[in-house]
Length: 206
Image (cartoon, rainbow, N blue to C red; front, side):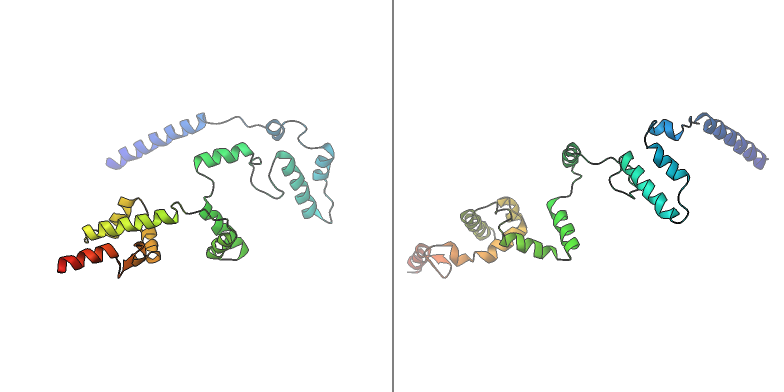
C-alpha cells in the first residue's frame, strides 16, 4: 500500500514539474533580430556561404575573426564577448577592489620576465622607485627608545604587544631592533647606558 501512495505522489510531482517547465518557454529570436540588420557586409555573407575549397578552415576562421571584431570583441579568435574596457570601467574596478594590488602586479611582472619578485624590488630600490619609509630615521630611533623603556618597565611583555602599542608591525620592530643596537640610542653611551646613568649608579654604590 505504501508503494502505491509513493507512486501516486511521484506521478503528481512529475506532472506539476512538467507544467511549470512548459510555462517558462521563451520566444526564440533569429540571428538578425539579435544583432540587427547589416551587422556584416553582404560580400562577407556570400564568402561565408561559399568558402574556397582549398583553404576552407583558414577562410572561415578569417571571416569569423573579422565578424568578431565588428561585433565588438577585444581581439581576434577571442571567445570573450565583452566590449573593450574603458577608463570608467577601470575606475569602477578600482573602487570595487577588483584591480590587482601592487604586490600582485610585481609577482605577475616577475613571472612574465622570468625573474624573482625580490629582483624586481631590488631594482626598484636601486632606481629610487620604492615608497619612502613611513617613519623617518629619527622617528624610528625614538620608537626604538620607547620600546626599550617599555621593555625595561615590564620585561615580561611580548614584542608583539609592544609593537601594537607603538602602532608598528612586529616585523618592523624586529628589523629596527637589529638596525639600532641599544648602545647606539644614547649619544654619550658607555656599555649601553648614558654617562649620567652610569654616574648615578656609581654614586648609589658608594
